[in-house]
Image (cartoon, rainbow, N blue to C red; front, side, top):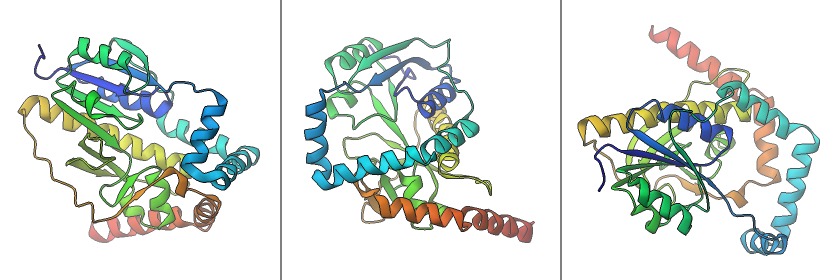
Length: 276
């Protein structure tokens, strides 16, 4: 039997996942954290899946891009920026934690059935199936993008790519099998700093989103009701992992070097002074 207000977090194990879980765990209703790892597939199967997803040329291009970012130190810089913004976040010690393999696996289902969540808080997993979502009375998701304008993968990257920094932020919405398509409970935007790079921008979206997530869940627990607005999916675009190629990476890196973020922060500061 479910207990009204009982919250379970379903997430991954990376720094951003730990940060969000730690923020949500400040709520006394959080009963457990389920940390999901993706199953390790044999190399041949991973290659076949990548070819099917990206095409042979796309797979090779992505592999080369990944090597180039690592060789130039860009991968390390982005990780360092993220750590600078989020700090050394760890999973909280006071909340029971369970580790499973596969977000829609029988193992994960068994754990969730035992935990019997009233609210399931999802963040940073692969697409959650209807069978998994049905194990909670209500399932929410944190998306580090402003929906419906930016849906799917790498939305902080694409907002920079399109020079629409006003759409950097996070969305808490109903979690459905339709990627980032559930009704919206709330949206938060971010406060950037002039020297932010890609890693820092993502981190600021995570911070804004985690505080928003905590507020929405708390309101749902205390008021038992909060209005959610259906998304107009004719607005904006769904971005896929395969779309982030050499040209997109080069464009964003060049925009940042030329002062995209610095100029945006300066403009926002001027606007604040003008309205003060």
